[in-house]
Image (cartoon, rainbow, N blue to C red; front, side, top):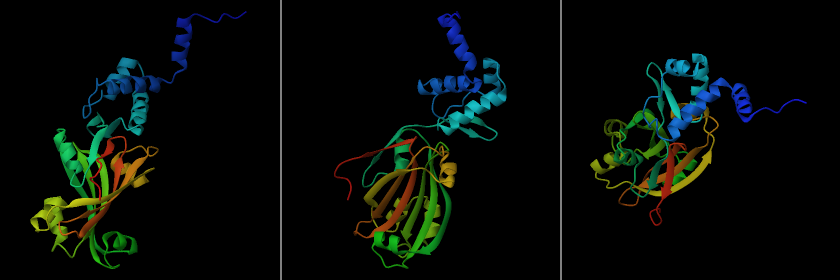
Length: 253
């Protein structure tokens, strides 16, 4: 009769059967989740972990790839791998802005304008902004970052007839809220918000450094100025592993 073996022998056999990269993955993941490795901090270099666990650097890279696909770390060419910022709560109100959320938590916020061009409203955008199809607009695509980590990808359609030289002013100010205020249009307020979830496109996953198999939040919103005119509508794609949305009752129009 074959002996079953002791508990320690069975545990040892399990460790032998466990992929080497998975042991490294589990150890680093645990260190992140318990706070030993803080958001924004650098994870141990591949060489250090290969020495510690007695595995090849390719094995460590496999573990880091899994951590990256799960949204726990990000790799920066020439700099190493860093722990991702997770679980930032964005309280959505009429005048709230995600950059303010980042700033309040000591995270350096920035907006990277990816592209902008003057265009004309199609039927869908015209309906949302309550203008005629063909109305002049500025379409701007930008990325909101915190400590160089991408959180939100936005595509905005802004009425170009309400602000002269809109494209230049938006590039200079990096904030439509600020431009509207400077132009005497008053406070830009969110008047509608709709949220859905879906898988990211290849481009969205790349720009947001989000796993291709992890859902993103798709937030459609429209913003108006003091006289009630709608100034913009936007589609924001948010990394759901880094942002939680919270809505306050009575704030949405």
